[in-house]
Image (cartoon, rainbow over all chains, first blue to last red; front, side):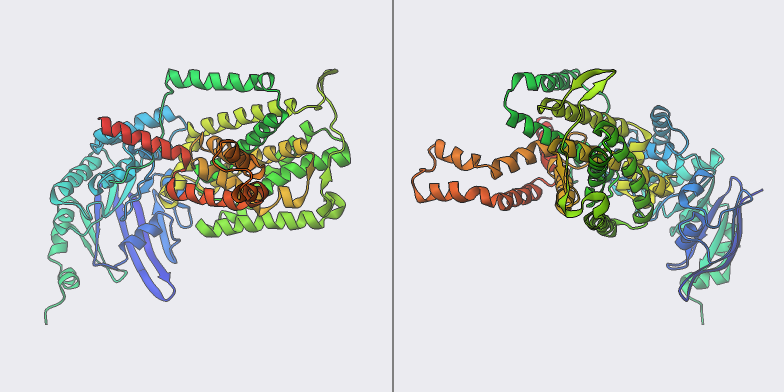
Length: 238
Length: 360
């Protein structure tokens, strides 16, 4: 069953079409890679899905429910959570408090929230940083914190916006391991990433956006051999 | 790596030393009027209490939630005017009037919050100033209800009775002292309660990053309004206390921009977003402004022999220093803000943190 359906979604900023007529669906438990050159409209699509922008046209269905016009907090409560391309740590709060803010989405008790938070902190392996202020973490750990925080909201669908951006290869490997681990726990994921090797490795299916439109969709091997995709990334041969 | 102010990271558990120390201070405060006869000292303490109440109230909205309102005089004024109008024109005693004031402040806060929280950052600040100015100008012009620029003078305060026995007749400053002290303890308890609850976590998340907070399931409108509501209700309580203590209010004292700024300053000087920041702020600012206003400093300099009373400098200081109190006050505030950006409390806790790291 499709957990997320995107039906003919368009988003206009003035006359500019950041997304035009994009349609695809995510099956439960899969990892969907979302790729495309800079300015292709990947993050805009994330913002439309998670309620930061209302789509100008089209429909977004999450577990069969229409999501258009819902606020981000409501979207999160319904079980869809996102991370940010530019990490947004709650700088002057400690690591565990950051994750607790996420957990408090599902409980009113600080004690339960702390337990839920510690569980996710172990998943991303930040136990040694529990009481450090989030603003003092290096970038790799900030990205992990971001993931722990959204996981604490107990999502069914996770949207990861470039969690590997700016990381060194060792850190990227850790994130890849983390994403695969999250899949094992049954959470569906949609991942925006620029690192082709990584995205090919983790994705069950890939959607390619170019200038706001869907250029191609398929499994990783179909995508690498698709001439349109190659042209969009490398320029066409003449 | 920049060191972050430790005080803003939630700490759990209070050390026994701290608990004992706090209890000792509270006990001392309860016996203060018995130990000290001076009405002037009591007066200063009452002013400090009122400042702590309004500072701590502002702190819940400004310090924890990060919404810098520079229009809190509006809620202070609502409390003060509600209490005084009911007392003077309807003969309703202030201990009922203050509840009416708090209810009115709550309603006002919800209306204002719903409108102003659409704005962020500096635009919210401007809107909050504008709202307070609207209240001031309205109060000035609604002469039939508020007495306009003349203000309201409380001619007589009825004695407080519980079941026929007179508790107090408000003839001395002592009952006001205790009323203030109880309210201070109440607002500190509420701040602690907020800090150690879901509400506190959500407020701080909104302060640190609104968009991130929103994406983590926090309804911004609901929680910002909750912060403003708590803040406004207790600011109004401070207003009621001030009104019945001083016995006279007018728009230029209880609804002025000066007052809004003063409320914010208490927190900035003490340390924003900490429980005891406003306490420290009030303890610094009120005695400072009183000392500058009176001739204490000039007299002190002369008595200590630093300045000769007969010399030109001596006569100049005795004649003019108190006139420049606002100027000196302003300069001192600027110095504190420049050199102690986390407030007095933050400055000392950073210092302590540095020393600890040095030892380690």
